[in-house]
Length: 118
Image 1: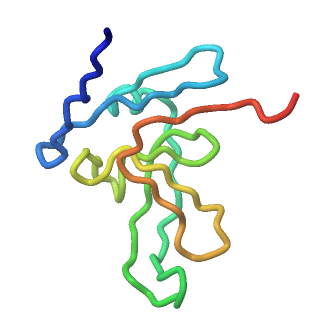
Image 2 (image 1 turned 60 degrees about the vertical axis):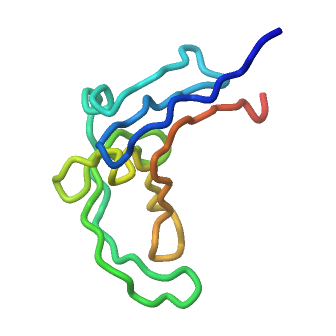
Image 3 (image 1 turned 30 degrees about the vertical axis):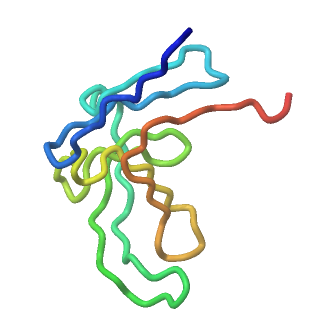
């Protein structure tokens, strides 16, 4: 009989971050810590105004994110300050939205790639 155990919880208030898992239809699946992401060429996204999706009401200004390019930006810095787990690192940032509030996925744990068509 196999007994499943729950993963050890990450204490985000202590600045801990779990490795980001890149899995799926990849030649080389990866497991990366934030420190490893900083070794890749950096890209900086533009600053933007965060707005409510439904009303377009201004919420706050957001400093530029810096990180590595996948299809979108996998950010490890914001406004020249390092992001840590407490601030949601790593952050998947997409500036491609038509709405002036790009998508954010904080505390990204896994990216799974799939081949949709051949």
